[in-house]
Image (cartoon, rainbow, N blue to C red; front, side):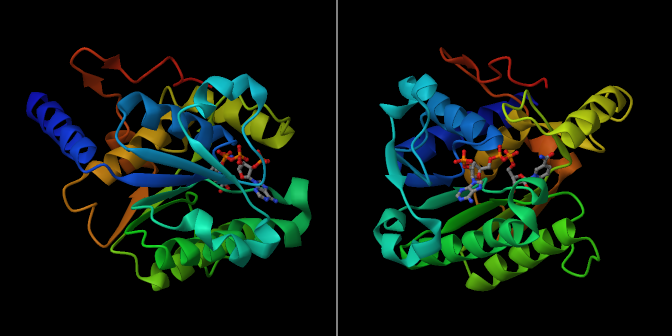
Length: 255
Ligand SMILES: NC(=O)c1ccc[n+]([C@@H]2O[C@H](COP(=O)([O-])OP(=O)(O)OC[C@H]3O[C@@H](n4cnc5c(N)ncnc54)[C@H](OP(=O)(O)O)[C@@H]3O)[C@@H](O)[C@H]2O)c1
């Protein structure tokens, strides 16, 4: 483990010297927000751009000074191609729910917006695209949620990024700001089950965020296509401790 930690340190230093740029889609959401904090804590990118339908809320003002914020209309995304220009890495944590947006709205956000954004990122020079998908994603599934997740994975893969990382987390453990009763129950049940099967069905959002960052730091970007299932996300998303900077755990691991 000591060697792995040492290698990680070298990779972070290497990444910093490259002065790369990244964007996050969905930085106002539960995973995106933690991902942003992780990226800023590790100081890996010279430029971080948030692309969203709104700016971060005033409570997150302290984060805003370190990033560029591009507000776009996802229904006219082609008109905002410049927002996607010149980023080496793109993180996508975008998504809604059927309960919130209806079935059509869910498909529009979780599939169409993501594919359009990925295409613009690719055209803009993005080499590594990371997509937060879901455990069980399967384009042949009879369940809308899992089918859409499978479809979006396949379509983004076709775009042809040098590196495409798919994360398939189980139920996300977090103190969600928005009320989602079904998910709250799932979190409570799976949060308890996580004591027996810690990597099977659920994962803290902080672990997902760290796994995304760790994937970017892999010497070969994890290969052309890397699919990280829930267990692999747990393995890759361990907290990092840097000399003089402390751990990035930040107490955000629990729901
Ligand atoms: N919940 C789970 O247990 C679970 C499990 C596995 C995978 N996932 C997947 O993981 C991903 C991230 O989940 P999360 O819970 O971290 O996300 P989240 O908290 O729901 O945040 C979603 C992000 O997408 C944006 N968004 C939603 N609807 C939009 C729209 N119509 N137009 C533009 N932007 C929109 C939100 O912007 P606003 O802040 O402006 O609303 C927010 O930035 C999603 O794809 C989700 O399906 C979730």
